[in-house]
Length: 296
Image (cartoon, rainbow, N blue to C red; front, top):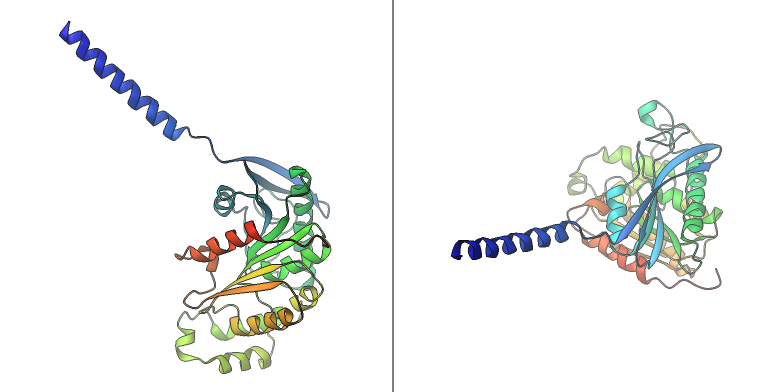
């Protein structure tokens, strides 16, 4: 009788532990996902929509340079914070059709033609996300880093459904100026230990161009937009001349544009995925709380 009682007690304990463990690992996600395909300029692009249970904002993630697939880890983090997301494979990459342009395949991915094409892809993605959410009260914005800093303003100018911009390490100078700076820093992580702002700016504005192509100036689109935007910069960036970009941003702010920026002095170009989580946290809070003008 005593043995039976001991067995029964142990059985209940094991059942409790199993049930507790199962519940811990079976906790339903705070968002759902849906793989989709959509058309842009005659090509089929593939992506995934992340839909939180309670949505505070929505974004399409825009790629930087390179052969980038959909950014699932970033999308998951945003969705866990109540932000609906559409992330997709860049054209010609992963499951997306079309032709990829970039130095890896010997073509120019930063001329006006390609940046405009990528902005059309982003605009098509915005339309898809808007239709999927089917709630006009949910504001849709664009987020991304680096090369996305040129693509996002082009997209926002094309598509009035875009209500805000959240950009990591995006240049507010022309493509050719950025390339001059990047060639001068030459990937040297210690560049700012041996060079001054004056020296870097001189080369950025006067060095001869290594390539000839139709340039893009983000200031053209940014001067026309009325939507809010936030830029996150790293003070040690060796791909984007941050002080020059902030100077141009301040010019737009002085003219009444609803633009903001945050500088992290010790970070480099990769502000969104550094060991410091504060840049992403600040961007998420900004996206969740930004007040959108009803006149847009």
